[in-house]
Image (tube, rainbow, N blue to C red; front, side, top):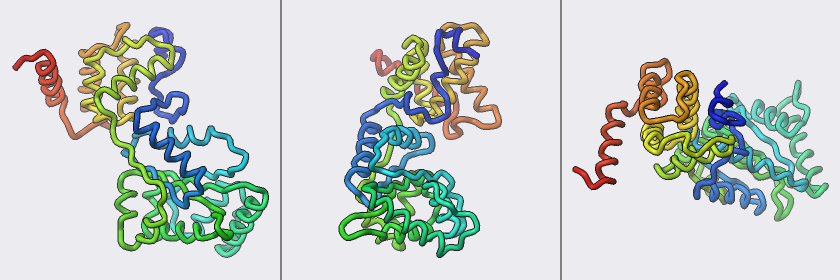
Length: 296
């Protein structure tokens, strides 16, 4: 819609996870390294957590680009499961196994035979569970039990759990102390800083073929303050601002236009951020300007 007007080859702020647009902050580089280490070191459990929209799923997509023939990966996105049988069915589906009409025991038996066959062919199995916090205590304990399947000193199945901050709280509960002791790799993604937000916006614009000056510096600071540094919310604001800019035929996204976007978001059905008002943001922005110019 607005791509040609701004000289873009594609939308720079899509809400869909796109590893090609991954912006490597220091913490995202470290998180990806930790994921790769967990995969290669036969860690029983690797846990990556972060706020909603912090970039966890994009990191997983990037990890999956490493097409290693010695690793068989299953990805479980649907964690709204009721019991172990349903969980085993989804795990079977993730690994391409037959699951329809099978009992709990049959699913478990097929899973063990699959792991043994993969091990015999020289392949390691890795199960990635996204939104793992939705499993809850009982099913997470069942996941731990599944991880006990091994052959001598070698694990037949590794698990990578990805989830929101509450996953960390769940794993700290007394009922899961044995689970926590099995976690070899653990990393939490924090929100972007002001400087990282500016770099993130410029990175995505450049990746889409646009000019780094498309979003003014003050505009980027306002986006950071309102989004609290959460990449998904940054994308929502930036994408909406580009629609507004196209509608008003503005070649760049200035502070005034972004203020309009935020005000409209606040009055809409789904405010991007309900913890802070636009008036507070504008006061914060003025304070920041005064500090940088030595005023006040």
